[in-house]
Length: 299
Length: 299
View (cartoon, rainbow over the protein chains, first blue to last red):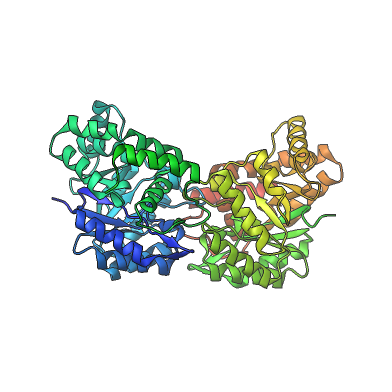
């Protein structure tokens, strides 16, 4: 099995008074290892990579590998400036990461050639396998299948993290098949957007890059195992059961909701997100606590 | 006259092999001073603020004030994380800036309350007057007039940089009047989007926050003076004459076009933009050179 398959869990990077809470972060990583996730992706969007400075990020990468107990760790290396992105690759490599994840962060709108050359720079800078991170909701860059294909031909491209699949199963299958048809066999597809996790795996994605998996790994593993063992109906039913959680994600953003759940479970300190991003307010927390209780999410 | 009125010119921050070219930057600032612009805004989008690290930005702020010969200098302080934004205010203040400009940079989508509290943090951190920088094209945050009003009531809010005005003069006038009606008198409005410069000033904006003014200050000053001296027809005619330039801005982004013009005039080194942002390619440069010659832009 590829390294870039199964459940990859995305832990939060909790802050405490604007400094990384290293103890909480280490405990989150150990919790993922204990649950048996297939890999850990540190410093994804859920890990607030875009908000942390270089030294903080290199430290988080090192902590993740140190506490993962041998489970492969991938590290988000996206930066607005190419030279800093290359420095983050160096940090991930020094930490002993098994791969890196790269999103085309933009301030000025990037064109396809600029994004291609960003990935080209990453792919020749080290031997680390690369996950192409397609997240138009945060980067505002829209990949085309053509650009996937061009980038996938670069050395060391190992996986593409796609932003969801169509809701309808046949459409999802068609979407994944079309992408697969333009990609080398060595490149896995990983679904993201947790509400699409089951549907994406059932449609043929090898991986689920999961936000909730970073905080509720048993829940996410159970869902992933249903989908990858061919229990399609059970997987889809479980994902539908979790609809109130996905609805919270849609309303407030998966980061804010996941941070509030982690706080409720005592896994992270209060106000663990990087300002200006704030957590849920008191009323929203009460509502979320009801969802957590109703769905039996505490683990 | 308010400090936040007239032509505010936005210089590039040229790089040379990924390091700030301090000599070119100082010369750009001196050129603006010599042309007699009303103010200089360093580290705007045109000054690549989002791509530079804290030490680079504090250094650019200091260089700008040092070489501005007494002309007021405003400094862009936007950062993804509130604590770093406050550090940039400290840098601007240490440099002797006359004001700061703040955009709500986002990775996670920010809500109105988060943006309000970002400005609240800035407004109580120092006595420096603040320009609210509304640039949805880069920040992907959409201000409402209601949020303008709330933020404008904070201490030290001096101006709002708005993203253009409607093309039709009566509609532009109505737009500016409506904004004015919800803002305290001490807050000036400044138009941005250079194709809207003349129309915005004619519609009652006190300031033009100008990209092209940072590289072709005589051109921008001449246009601004026509508009602010009541020569509406002449101002609009001059802006229409420049339509081929505005079209280049629309096609490639004002940053890439301005950098290519500055390079053509020998003001900045080759490839002065922060990678992954690339300059125009050879064919695009040839076309732009034709526009520059046709419009007589070299100054």
